[in-house]
Length: 217
Image 1 (cartoon, rainbow, N blue to C red):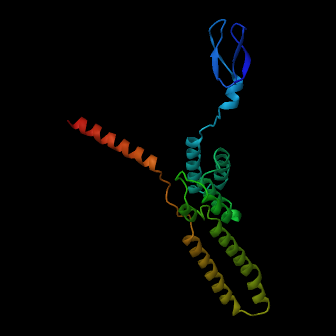
Image 2 (tube, rainbow, N blue to C red):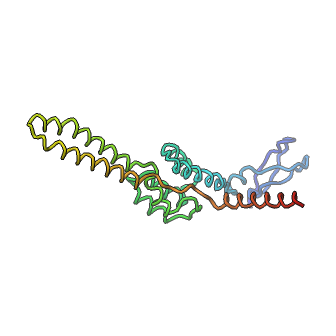
Image 3 (tube, helix red, strand yellow):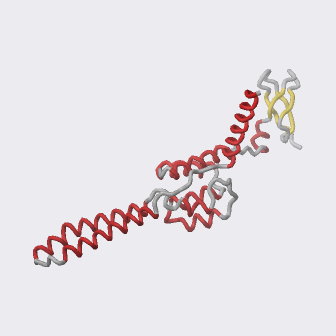
């Protein structure tokens, strides 16, 4: 046991108390005093950010549902700062950062989940911003432009008129295939639904039903 000298903040008296005690009483004025050294050394303060993390994860999922990658990435950075030790943030990062997707997926399996974004959601949201179909569509437009500007004039100059309908048919097939691909891989993600929100909605509906029955009586 080690005694340390503490100064009473009320009367200025010097009080000796054990270094392990968090608080004691002044022998001069009788007021309670805090041993700040013991507080700093013995208490491990940890903020509980789980509620805020869950709300942020929900906002990220809604942003991805809306196709807003910029907002989703900004919110994900915030969620990782609050709690990087959950699988949800790494599954989300696997979607938003495709280059490191395999690493993120492996890391996600090391942590527990809040149940907001799962491994199944990675497959569902993989093309949330339609980036794949947009790339195909841009390439198709570029090819169609090349056909109009290059192939048809060349066929006319060299009097190879039979190539014009062939080129037009090929161009039409390419454009049609592009639209079919875009439709097949278009944004088709179900609206996010969370269990706690579902329970709240059920409770509201139940309360409304009870009120209606009471009014009828």
